[in-house]
Length: 325
Image 1: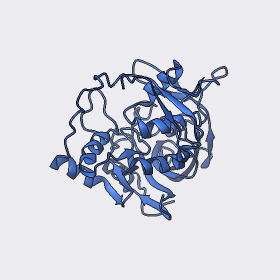
Image 2 (image 1 turned 45 degrees about the horizontal axis):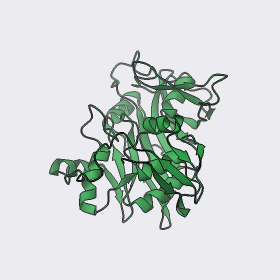
Image 3 (image 1 turned 90 degrees about the vertical axis):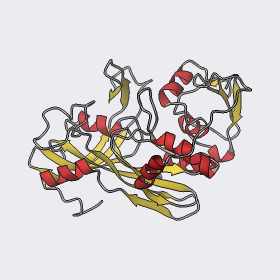
Image 4 (image 1 turned 180 degrees about the vertical axis):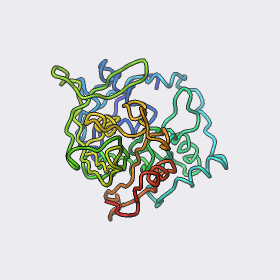
């Protein structure tokens, strides 16, 4: 984009959060970049400044400034995007749990990035670009998982489907269940963590922490329900986590906040003094997702555990087949 553009909020986007709207219309805009654009007043709704979590209303006008990642002249030819290579196609199909005329549901491996970066050349968003060459329209991410978090992730085949699902993901209509192995045992054995989070920047990367008095303007409310499913003495436990909000690193920050960081979590202390025989990898898995399908009915998909968590379950004596939420 080489000039300011103005977009009208469509009827099916009424009530959608601004960051969700950008994910659909400008998927290459990262949350950090969008946060900068809103903070500096470059993105506006109507004549007013907004935040990334501002709810949109039908008919409102969104001001989108020239975006820094696209500095080509307006008459420059579009970038050629190649279709999937055989290796990329095999990788995509190895992740596929469900496909219909509207969506893909994948089991993302731990360590596989959802979006690209300076040193990330193979990522899910890149696979979707190549797949779009074949489908005639690029599939769009509906939500995201951290690079090291494995499990279910939903892809919309078309923009209209992404808009419909985006509204669901912006509410509590979508039910997500994560499994984690944590250090120690949460007390009580089940409960709700309602702790607002704020981003803490450092040379080692961004982390989320509990907000403090006076930081209310920048905090994000975050709520997680948890339940201990099994435990290995007092050393570690298998926990079911259900986020009622969708903040960056929410589950990881919340489990650390109550003193039981997720095993292998190098941002929140879960990689310190690991148990013998346990892989130093993040033990967080998006196990199950449930939501209304745009055409009716309910999507209910469960993803098998990644290899390192399967090994940890065996080491600690946890039986993943004993019960599944």
